[in-house]
Length: 634
Image (tube, rainbow, N blue to C red; front, side, top):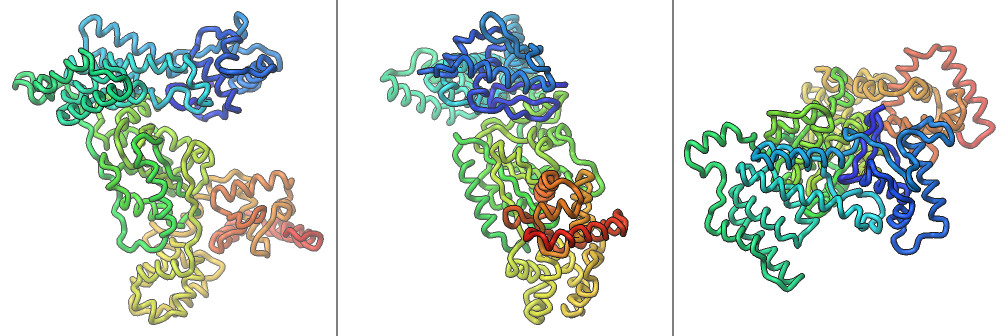
């Protein structure tokens, strides 16, 4: 069982790659305290002081014991009652959390910082810089984010933030010595947000900006801190900051390319690959139509990312197969691209690809880092790749489009931690864990009849549509307003320009009860194949109920009728129906009542005929018919 604890940013615990629910805020706060004091006993008195800084309740000790017991069971599931376990131990009138250096980001940060200090002390600035940068790569935001603010303000957490600032200063010193300050600028900016009046830190930022060739920005940074010192403390810049400003004015700090020729050759041989501005978005089709409300919602959410000090924004665009998720995401990404001057990344995650396995997060990260200009000396392991990726994005404004995700765990390592970034994720699944982590849900329903008709008009031409309005309306209806089906039929109409739309509508009428009319000529767009990719991911009970729903004669079904149909307990069927709705193979159009899209119902009937015996289907129908007279919920 592999555990991973993170406290240098959002408080997280993962077991075998899956994030755990850490419970109530005060319980999370206890865990955060134990993590920042990892390896040392924390007296109960100190715990009470941290969790209730002003007036602890009379039951505080009992509450701490209860939270400790809950955390013990969370970290070691299956632990017998009253067993001490090996993680959360009673020690010296308090508690001790046992974690390994490879399990906790804070311990790894401290170990790498020690290595960097030893390298710096022995005159090896390049090695020191590498260790410092790697140490800071795990810093993802405010320490222990997610616990109550009143607890996070305690000195024990502030001390960890001071450690981060000190390591950032040492990293800047090493970077200035070896002329590679571009590696530390994002960390310096983040550290300045933590400690804005730290003149030593500010001086390093000013010099590092100049050494990176950003002379004007360096001078602006000095003016900003001079004004802040005057307003907050009523003082002028001290000696260290004034000397840094003087060095910038004298142009003593120049980019590596400004050195003599022999030094430039050496620098080129050792320099890291440049960070580039990727432009990876696929082309936006000119025939996009409808979805104005959804595009408006994307713009609203993006406003949150326009504030550089805010959190990274994320949008989950979900919906059934063929509903137009990718089309909306690509069109929206192009509309928003100019708000993200540092580039756009695009990754096809292949979550529901009919011919290829889903893309592994580590493989995706390697491709994204290459897109950002980092392809040499990539670390091994998912955590290290994710840390490097977030470090490269730190301080930048990048739009990331993650298309066709299978689940949250495929997406989570690919999310940036930098304020000002925007991630658009598309998936056929609802991904509730991603939403719980802060992603804004944008669930796509079917377009209105008018929008569906407009989609058809854009594809085949307005003149052809207006010449046969009744046939066009029938095509829209028989396609169930599904954009994928409309695209397939429109492609057929375009390939047969002399065939009236009435004849195409008649073909759809004759094929009712089959998906044969919605097969793409080249096999790339095929409704049956698209639906099958969603169906294949279902567990056996869910797949069986999905098939048997085609036996139900009504337009929708409730859980009790579904239980009769599947001959399963109602409680189990409610979970299955929710699972099918989350996979967008059903729609919960009103609370407790579920409906299938017409084409999905046809698909379910085809599958049932193939996988369920005639006897089983007849028995399911008989059970349902016997149930209907006794209830109003069928």
